Structures are given as C-alpha cells and as structure tokens.
Image (cartoon, one colour):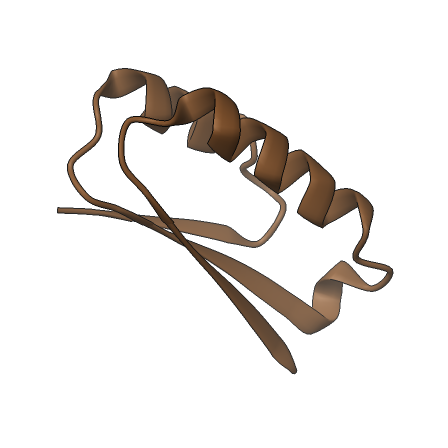
Length: 63
C-alpha cells in the first residue's frame, strides 16, 4: 500500500458520501491505497454510508 487517505467525520453523512464518491472516482489504482474514516461518534446515518462502500478498502473507526 502506498497511499492512505484519512477522513474525519461527525454527523455529516451526505458530505461523507459525496467525498467518498469523488475520492474513489479519482483514484486510478485502488489497490495501492486505503481510505480510513475516523468517526467521532456519529449517528446511524454515517454508519449506513460507510456500509455502502464495503469492498473498496475503506475502514471505519468509531468512538
């Protein structure tokens, strides 16, 4: 793995969804990177957004 993208979020599911969509559409070789989403105790909507991106090397961490 050569690149790690780290995103912080808290109760912004629409922004997170748009950000992940944009980021993933601009990565040419997804096998060379990972996306880490650090969640500061968001509500369920944020977890639902992250669940839609399974299989894209996206890891979510919740407090």
